[in-house]
Amino acid sequence: MSDLALPKSGLDVEALTSYLLSRKAGLRIPSFNPGICDDSESRLICLGSVTATNGTLNLNPDESQQNQQQKNQIARVLFRYPDDKLSPHESFGSYIGILDPSTEGGILRQLAVELDTYKNEHEPDNNHVAIVTTSVQYPIASKSLNSNGVYLRSGKEITVEIDYDGWEKDLQVSVAYSGNPLINVLSQNIVLEDTVPQSTYVGFTASTAYFFETHQILSWNFAYYNLLRKLLKHGVKRNKPKIALSIVVPTLVVSTLVFLEK
Picture 1 (cartoon, rainbow, N blue to C red):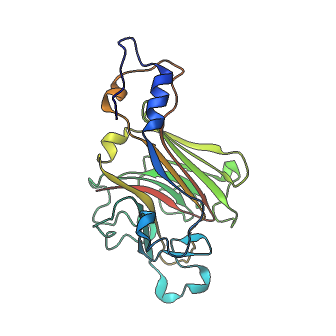
Picture 2: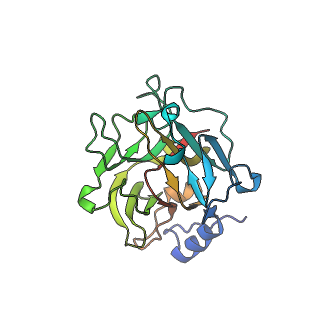
Picture 3: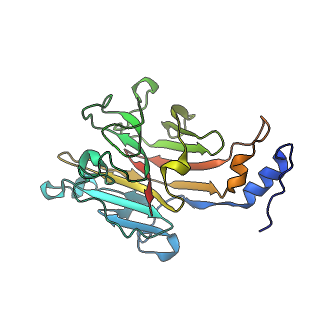
């Protein structure tokens, strides 16, 4: 692929847009067929208690299949690369399958957008969104959804959109009941290249503890653009296109997007 010419006075927006669109990649899954976790062509790796039924990806067993022995469940779904590392041993419950007491607050390089329906200490309530890096107990940002009128445990279909602007270093989370306009609920400045390694996994993780809860994903749209480092060093005019990472997740209940160190 030919490189993009960078004029000294700045980037040409039309040329930049065309270039970036040519480097767009990702996947779109409108529904999850029963064999998607076992299909090598799907590029999904399903670990733990994940199942796919009736077009829905169940990160934890549905209510009819849950019993006393199915507490402390952990599930992970990863796109593109197989994960050779299992979830930390005690990462159930509030640790959402990515951390545990031994790694909490450590140096693991990862980023997660958490949708939480259980209030733990230091959390605003049992209906909030949080951005987690090295600590689930002390996220870098969190926001209750109550004021926006969206309730994660309502049983309604909810659309979650996560956008990251590579120039502005801005991560935004928007939510709404499916069919309604998205509402921006959380915005956080974060340098992604300093937070996760260059080679990463992207996917979902979910966990339960003493209480049962069903985590379902109805569809997933994931898009990203391969940006050259020199593009990040050269500014563009004010009307530059917003190019970054975009993930749209319609979901029934709570789910978590996570970037994991490869």
